[in-house]
Image (cartoon, rainbow, N blue to C red; front, side, top):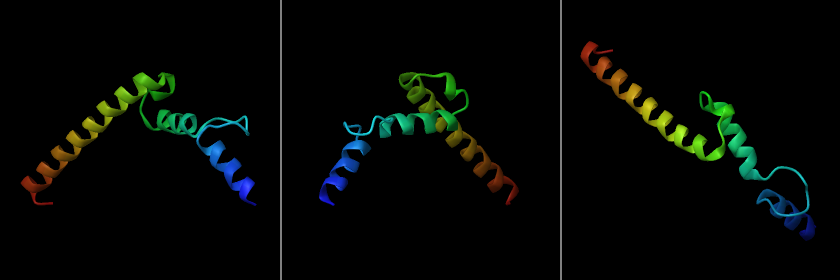
Length: 73
């Protein structure tokens, strides 16, 4: 039982024993699907694009909050 837990833990952090993708690779693929244009980007550019996208979303939120205060919505 204990060896199964250790094997799963190693696989989750990208260690030997499974042959599949590491958890980081899986998360990068998920992030690529969330970010517009992210599917064609490599990880380093994807992280920069993600930061830009977050800033863009924050700006949109600030504009919408300001508009709702102006029009009291």
